[in-house]
Every structure is written in structure tokens, then in C-alpha cells.
Length: 123
Image (tube, rainbow, N blue to C red; front, side, top):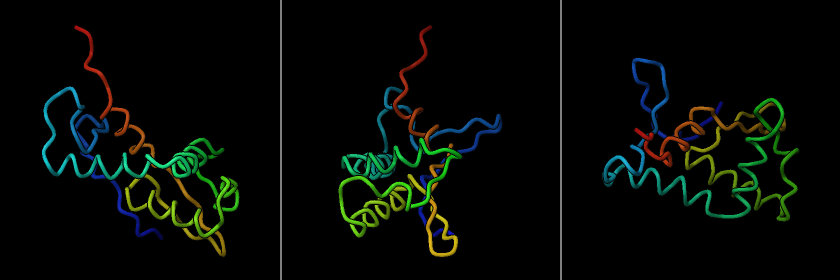
């Protein structure tokens, strides 16, 4: 039950995940591609958000309850704010289960981020 925006990914016929944008070394980005990538990088540009993203991504089972990741040195309302920003950037999805909210980094998001920053293959 999530209303999070997710980075638009392209699903090629071969089943491989393609990022929303071409690798930076492939060609100049369009304005739309740059906006999408900038939202993602802006969200990760804050140390607290980066710690929260890392806590979720590295948590056992691939998802984390907010109760398990909120010890990042800021108040609970601030944690909620940062998690909201990560969801809005399409980096996290969330699901409410009873009184707790569980967060997940979709594998396709990590794959897209990696491909965006990948160097061209050596020939």
C-alpha cells in the first residue's frame, strides 16, 4: 500500500533492467533524464538520508521496519521527513503493517543507479 513515486525504468526484451537514463558516458542527458537523476542524487546528498537508505538496503531480508532504522542521530519526525524524501525520489517503497511502516529498496532501483554511473565496457 504505497503511494511512492518510483524512478521510471525501461524493461528491455531481454529482461535486463535499464536505468531511467543512459549511462553518463553514453550521450548527453535530455532535460527530463537530468531532472529524474537529479532528484535521486539530491535525495542521497544528505548524510542522514544516505544512512537511512543504506540501513534499508543492507537490512536482512531486503526490507526494514522504521523501528529498526531510526537510530541515525535525529528525532523521529526528522527521520520520517527524510524517509518521505527518499520515497518521493523513487529510491524507497513503503508498506504499512499495523502500526509500523516497512521500507524496501527495489532491486531495480539499485541496478538503475549502477548502470547510470557505469563506465563503458573496455573493447
